[in-house]
Amino acid sequence: MKTPTAPEQARAWHAEFAWLPGVGILPDVLIEAAGDRFTTITPRVGVGSLPPGVIRLGGLTVPGLANAHSHAFHRALRGVTQAGRGTFWTWRERMYQVAARLEPSNYRALARAVYAEMTLAGISCVGEFHYVHHGSDGTPYADPNAMSLALIEGAAEAGLRITLLDACYLSGGLDPAGWSLPLSGPQVRFGDGTAQEWAKRVGLLGTDEHGMLGPSAMVGAAIHSVRAVPPEQMATVAAWTHATGAPLHVHLSEQVAENNACLAAYRCTPAALLYDAGVLGPRTTVVHATHLTSADIRLLGGSEVFACVCPTTEADLADGIGPFGALATAGCRLTVGSDSQAVIDLFEEARRIEMYERLASMERGHFTAEALGTAVTWDGHASLGWPDAGEIAPGSLADLVTVTLDSPRLAGAPLPGRRGARQEPRELNLHLLEAVIFAASPADVRNVVIGGRDVVADGRHLLVDDVPAALSAAVRAVLD
Image (cartoon, rainbow, N blue to C red):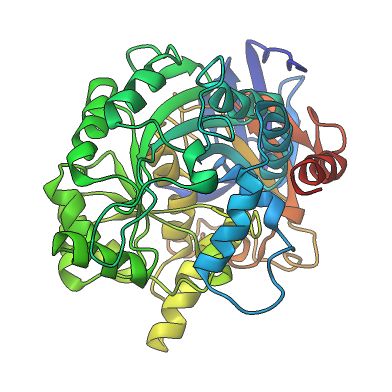
């Protein structure tokens, strides 16, 4: 494993422009850090006043981006599932074929490459929704958490902070009569038998009392879905998160068929089932939340859950368009995820929230750039158990993403005034953030700092020498 050098005790960067919490975008911002934390943020520091050793960041610098929902191995399916017709369920069969080929060694290589792609796209933290736990016949590995460790090690090698959302997955779905089906085929790799056995295995990871495995790795929990975990088993998973204060994530109402099966089995919607099982709360993230009733939305908002939406995946799999605006209005904090890795571009995920609302309502202006930026930074990190990340402020984790402003996509973007210029009202000085949220792509990311350590410089990954080559080799290993 290639171990990056520890960050220097004191570091400093000078951002041409930076997005600061509660202020907006300011020019010439001196950003100082000690270890992995910001210490001092000073706007309007001229170049001539900089101390020696300061790193210049040209463009707009924003906090690190949080990818709140990822299945790393789905990256192997990019470009190979687009031919012909089908549904989510036919896509799932192809996904199971890839899952059947995963082993700790090839999964670590794939995760390392995928996470390196993420960092090149400005992502500083990933929530990995992990359910491929055991050998191909369902037998645990000698280390029952070998697959979990492969993901954690892959993230470390790519320089990425990770919340491993270890998923409880106990049944193969619900039959038309509402009975739980046994795990079958590749699904046998996913199951621990009972939620108690799941908790016992996760406990062997050796986290501290806060669920931490180290300064850049945390373990949270996931209930795969109401299809995969019977309601009587859910309380054990929820109790495990209460003991550690860990985040709890769950797929919710991604498909109409899921809702229908839940209604047949339990005479209620998936959201109501999760509420009755004690799963919903401020540390819970519901993923997708696409097909909801108005009562579901009120229930989720009243429970103060995060709602993680994955618009590129939901479009790729023909899931449908979720009620983004209604969820936010009800009180849910929105986050985004790359999910199936159809693309890895959180700017695209964020802007599609607004674009889909426009398509559904035939009106513009539902979500501001600042609201969307908050979803991919502050709220995304909070949903993954890192409330001390996602903003450029003293005491926060020292994560920075710098987006160039001279690419074909962003050339001509409005620039806020510099020293001596008239101070713009705050509602006007976010135009540059609007340009980035609504037009930028990963190709515009030039520098990424994670925990005070340079991971991407001038568009080049510093820990993985050739990311495309690493991806090609890792994908071939699980497809060929």
